[in-house]
Image (cartoon, rainbow, N blue to C red; front, side, top):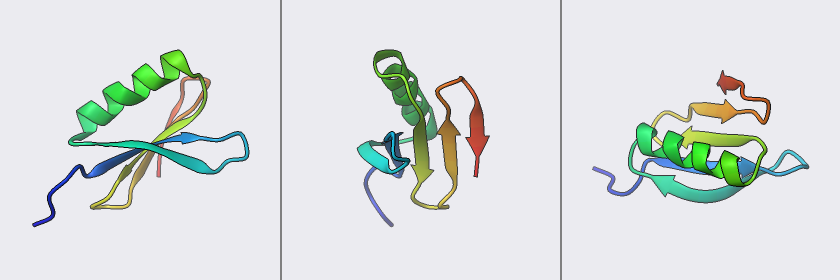
Length: 67
């Protein structure tokens, strides 16, 4: 069993590259952190599930895209 925080949080740089910010224990905590980040530093953010590889992208315009 893997211990640790299974959701990685990234800001998306202007060049499109993801910049790792931190990890979260669950999706709710990751989403809350992304919303806080977006208030202080507008731009795109992404949550990546380490277990599934699925991504949730939060766009600067308020959209949400699931990959």
